[in-house]
Every structure is written in structure tokens, then in C-alpha cells.
Image 1: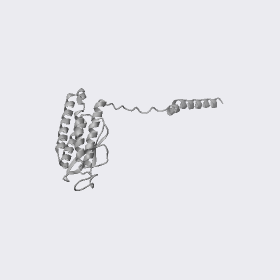
Image 2: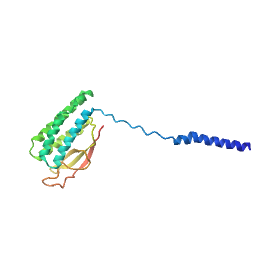
Image 3: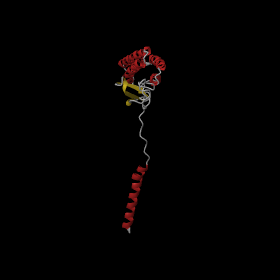
Image 4: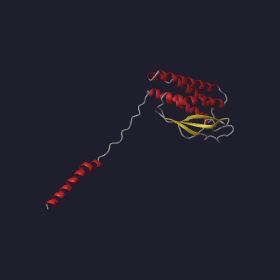
Length: 204
């Protein structure tokens, strides 16, 4: 009888030990994983200004989709003015070389934007737009440590003369081609969606 009682006591003790030290631990709610904060490197003023430049570029791109040279030039004027107002002085707190590189990028982008303004032929305007795009990405976005919305780099393999490729930047993965556009003299709107996304520009 004592042996049965002893066995019963040992079994009860084992069960209680399992409940308190194992089962209780299993039922304990686990804390959610820690989320790393994405710290912005730039001031809100600089980031807002960069967003405005990007939006002006997108407006130029959209004007070329519509083959609207008047709108393309008007948006290019706004684009240049916004580049001039970028408060890049704060980049000096990083290194002088970053500031000077961005300053050089902006000067090169503006030179092609100003060239676009004096063109009368839409194909030549699109050539300048293509060069502006190449200067914006990767150089400008990488050097300035871009922190804005996600953007996409798209490529048309036949933007010029059916054999010369050109890129553009978009805020959508949908292909809407600014080089062939809706009113192309040969293809009309038939090649509007010609191209593919080849890269993306992500906020760091």
C-alpha cells in the first residue's frame, strides 16, 4: 500500500513539475519580433524637394507619352527650377565630395534639360529626355542617398530608329512608353506598351 502511495506521489509530482516548468512555458505568449526603424538621413525639407523634382520628371515623361511637346517643355522648366531650389547644402555634413558630386550631377542634368527646351523636333527632345534619365539613374539617386517613393527603371529596346534602346523612370511597373507613345508617326499607339522593367530605385 505504501509503495502504491509512493508511486502515486511521484507521478503527481512529475505531472506538476511538467505543468509548471514545461507546459506553462509553452503557453507563455511570445513577444513580437523587434522591427528595425528605418532612420532617414536627410531633412524633411530636402526629401520633399527631391520628391518634387521626381514628380516634375514624371510629368515630362507623361507629356512624351501623349506626344505633347508644349507640356513637355513646361514641365521641363518646372523641373529645372526645382533642381535649382534643392537644399543640397546639408549634404556637406556627410563629405564635401558627396556634395560636389551631387552638384555636378545637377549641372549635367540641367544642361540636357535646357537643351530639350530649345529643340523643335520631338525626337530630339526625347533624346535629351533619355540623357537626363541616364544622369538621374544611377548617379544622382545613388549619390544623394534617395529616400523617397519606390521607382522603377524601364527600358525600350527600340526607342530610336527601331534599334537604339533608351530608359525611363516611372512610379509604376506598368509599361507606358514615352519614346513611342500614343501618337507615334509609324506605330501610332501600337507600341505604347513596348519595353520592360529592368531595375527599381528603392529608398535606403
